[in-house]
Length: 92
Image (cartoon, rainbow, N blue to C red):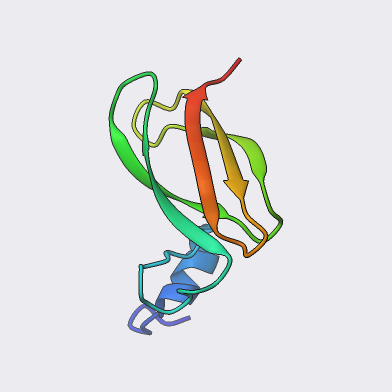
């Protein structure tokens, strides 16, 4: 690739191994991903993260985007695929 070639956002994501950004109301809106605001139970900072509701209720660990501590993310999804409950707690 020539240095002056422009990359679109999908090519940049693929190049650096990044996940795509989902904007509310933008392309990809209405899919099985919801954007939630999480307040870190360690440092107290708030950040947004995308959660996949396509497989129903979920439980997983994600590191805080600010202090890198592990956060236990739990979500309840109803039969229509809507996120109806979400919690973010210290792991363990």
